[in-house]
Every structure is written in C-alpha cells, then in structure tokens.
Image 1 (tube, rainbow, N blue to C red):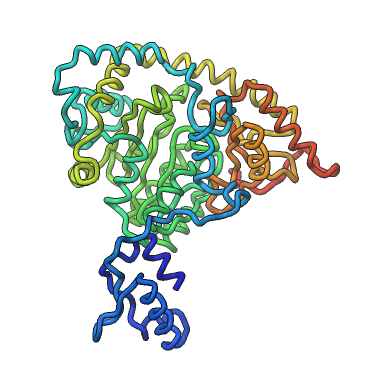
Image 2 (cartoon, rainbow, N blue to C red; image 1 turned 135 degrees about the vertical axis):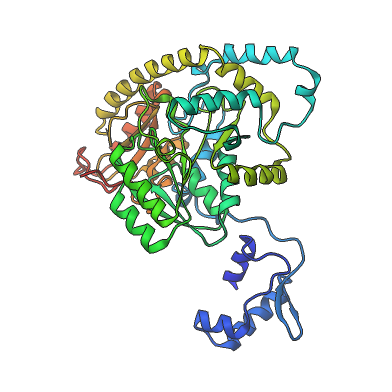
Length: 469
C-alpha cells in the first residue's frame, strides 16, 4: 500500500493509469495474491484507486495529492537534506549570518550599474514592457552570449542557443526533455545540492561519482557507464561546487570518450566560470556541443533578483526545448530581465566588475582559511577562484550537528552531507568566504569544538570525497 501511495504521490502513476495485475504484483513482490487483493481493496476503500470489473484496478480520477519530494522528518534528519540549506538561507530573518549560502553579499554586487540599467528601461518602447518574450529569448543578449562562447572555443550558431528564466529552469527543461521516470543520472559526489533536489522531483535514479581535485574519479565513472547505462551526467567543470576543484584536461578527455561510447549526455553547468582568473578546460569546447550541453546564468556575478539563464546545445535539441519552454512558460524569459542583463554585459563594465570581484575573493579566501585554520578546520584544496571553501572539520565533529546548533544562534552553515549522495561528507562543510567576516561565525564554531571529547585531535582523517592519487 505504501509503495502504491508513493508512486501516485510522486506522479509515477497518474489518474486513470492501470495498476499491475494482482498475480503480476504478487510475483514481483514475493507475496501471495490474496495479500495484493487485500491491499488493493483497502486502497480502493480510501478512494485512491478504483476497481473496474473484468479489467483490474486503476488510479482514481480524483485530484492527485501534492508532489512529495521529502518525507516529514525530525529536524536532526533534515540537517542533511538537500532542501535544508536553501530553506534556511532563503527564509532567514534580517541579521542572520549566512556563511553557508551560495551567493555574494549585496554590497559586493554592481548595484549602481544595475540601477542605471533599470533606469534605461524607462526609455524602452511599450512592447518591451508589456509583451511576452521571444521564444528563444532576446536576440541582443543571445548575440553577446554567442560571442562569449566563441571566446572559449565553443563554435555555436544562433540556432544552438536559447535563453531561460534561470539556470535551474534550464536544467529542469533538460530533465523534462531528456529523461523519463526510472532513468539513471550520474552526478558528482559531492555536488551542488539542488541537483539532487531537482532530480528527485523527476523520479530518476541518482548515482554519485566520487570527486577528486582533478575532476570525477574516471575509473568509477567508466564502471558506472558500463553497469548502469545512465542517460545523463551533470557536473560543474570550472570551480566545482562545493569543492572548488578544476577539471584537468586529461580527465576531461577520458570523460568525453567514455560518455560518447556509452551515448551518455553530459550537462555542463558553467555558472562559476567567470570567477576563474584564467579559463580552464571546458567540456563543451572539447566536444563541440555533440554530447555536451552547456547551461549557465549570471545570478552569481550580477544579480540573483534579475535572473536569466541559457542553454547551448545541438540545434535539433534546442528546437524541442523551445517548444517545451512554450508549453511550461509560454515564451522565453522576461524581456525586462534580458534587457537589464544585456545592458550590463555590453561594453567593458562586466570585465572590470569581475576583475574587482576576483581580487576581493583572493583576500577573502586567504583570510578565511587562516581564521578557520586556527580552529583546526582545513580546506580540502586551495581553489583557483570563486567564493567556496570545502573544508574538513576536526575529528569527531559532525557538520550536520554543527549546522543545526548554529541555526538557533542565527548562523546558517552548509553541512557536508547535503552535497553528498553517498552521505560520506559528514566531517566536511562548505564555507562562503564572502560571508565569513563576522567574528560571531568563528565563535559559534569554537563553541562546537569545545563540545568535542577531550581526546579529539584537530588533524582530520574523516571520510569524504576521494582525493586524487
């Protein structure tokens, strides 16, 4: 009964769908037909399914229950839930410190330039302010993005690029377009926690690939391709989230060769690329958009409030994705948002803005690493750029417990296991260095250390993502 309820709640069974036959379900579950009959009768009495004489049982045509992504759990269990950090960070009250969030402080963002861009909209024609967006998005912004892709070595034509509301929506469209319930998807372990949350909504099988300082563990990746035949692999190439690692050319070539041989599509989320001091290996550039799809946005560098994402892929896939975006969004992203982003990308402003951000982040990473080091908290690696530090806590300290305790003190941390499919990152934590200047953060961490048994050592050998050999 629980299995049927969960399949209906998760949309794997829709209103009007026929349930497995009594004998068929009995055979697959290893129970007697009479047990299945009783279960079906009880579900029918609840109104969840209905019998049809001579045909079997069907899902009721009544309104389905809300899509269920997470079970009701204790607060302690939710500390390692992929939704936990998002909820705590987005719903935080004023004054809450957020070293676990995934964005820069408001005062670091180009707010005056954003205001100028917004004021420029006052001169826009009525259609810009009143109409739906073009199905592929703003032509002006797409031309700018095509130029940026060409600088990276990605030779894409206008027919290979579309705009979306956000990079999250871009990934959601790709999942709707390419996946079916029950498909297998590979993600990095650890990885950006919302990849897990989104894939859970699509009812697919998610498997993690251990991540090393040079990229995913290639031997494990190749073995999983052979054993699981995954449909997709989703990753960050530049400044991987949460580790800050950079994909090496050798690993990139092996990934592409293995994925092509198994007909696995790679989705490359490049949202942190502009934080790199110099560009590094990109899968889309090596592949030419044959088996790789590039997605991205400017929410990390310009504004998380004025949002616009993009998808670069094969032309025939873009055609299908445009139709899907019309069906789910009726048109492309907001013309107003696209105009503002395009205004800020044009000219030399964006380059100078990113140069200043990178300089500030160099100082912030160094200062944060020094202050954490005094507490025995050490970076997994020293990233080339970006605002994330993936750190080991001292032995005996569980990052989930630290995060739960810290919330009550007005500090939101990002515990390691929210990023880990295998739940092997309990001794790790992601710190946003741009939000680490308040001394209260270090006081909360120091109090957590005092709660450790006296025999605990600052030197950590805890489990976590596999290091490169």
